[in-house]
Length: 218
Image 1 (tube, helix red, strand yellow):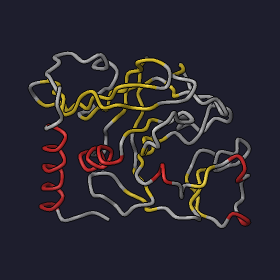
Image 2: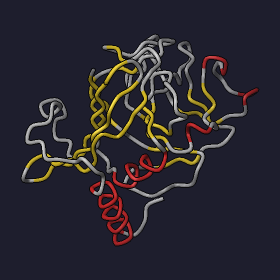
Image 3: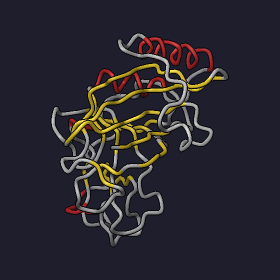
């Protein structure tokens, strides 16, 4: 799925230019997340503004410091707002700093620096607390899945036209939540994910590289 370096670099430049063109982006010498993201050079900041609404700012770090490449993107979070940590069955978006390991979607790969999985009707996110593959993507026919599909999520839905996996509960501890994604909005609250307009999400996916993180606060 990797492109030639020259094409890949051009795609990143195009995506960065699209994001930079966003209105309202202003320099911020010390963003709120600066001491929490380690060596990450790309950060997606999500800050709650009340209820299930939030605003998203996108930052790039260079030798001269942090620079915003997009600002004030309307964002939807969990119907229960935000919470200090994830919990299975509770529709709140967890706060903290999370990796963005790979992307997926029902649509073809839009390009960018992350691995991308195009999903269909046999792709699931295992949400069964008692399953050995809890909180991972699995591929199986519904009747043949080794986990409880009623506790899991089929990934062939409109909200996952494009999505990025959020590294929530990477230890896969039962009860600590599963299936948190940065995905296409349907215009309403999520079950704990982070959602924005699909066109802007595609631009961000095209810009993302390995090592990027999402920082979430209230």
